Picture 1: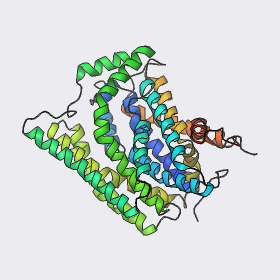
Picture 2: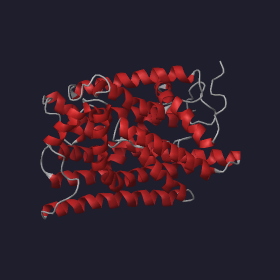
Picture 3: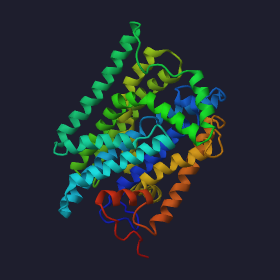
Length: 396
């Protein structure tokens, strides 16, 4: 039988919460490099950290973490969409207006997050993709999977075409970084006061918004469609062991091989063409490695129950913790607080990320012993349902 954490609401699936907590940890270990450095936001390594260990960490994060955990998080967004549909049907509630209010709340939270804390916000993307899920909610699982594969293939082919254009000497938008001057300017602004920090965030948003629409939205939608398909089949309630083993084999062979090539293209300094081809390979193989991670965790949860008890509470408060990660890192690295931007090495960044997540896990355990929802989850739930959630305080 699947384990279940104590005091979890009856309609929750423990595996979904644990997977979401696991994804949060991975997202933090990727995002912290971009929160801690103006160079990384400009697509460059931090020049002050050039040791073998520094480069090893960069390669490790790119190969095993970058673009995997936000896809896992997106998969869970699509899966949870089916749970919300089922819940509304059981209660006889009008789902569409309720979900639209939820998406509006996500968009506003994401916009504030992007402007004040982290331009790499994912919540605004989920708000946009959520509209597509609403339109496609009647799609069959098979059709959803086929559409996800088609979206991924089209995106990968677009990067291959861009690489071909670069070979011909044509300018490819977004293929080059902003350069050293931009990175230095970003560092100065991020060490300043709130006004200069917001100014830099707005500049970064203006640069990445087109790439986000063309790249991130379709990639997130593809992952959400896989979640939608598996959610309609209630796959995570009773995962098929054979399916999990297949995902592990595919992810830990083809996935790792592809990600090794992607990492080489990203950090070897071999030029625009290889970098674009590496992006194409990444689009195809990162989902495989993310699926292998999820399959491995699902196989471990029944065997190592403390693992589930550790990951599920931060997963139940995923929105609070996701925003909290950016707030804590902003207080550490920008002028909002200690202004340590580009003063912390990549290995130390990972240790900071682990410490932050451990603190969030402990806080989530403490909070959920007293409350049904996380603070931001409570706000979003109130907005979604148009009334204050009942029984916010847990019975003791």
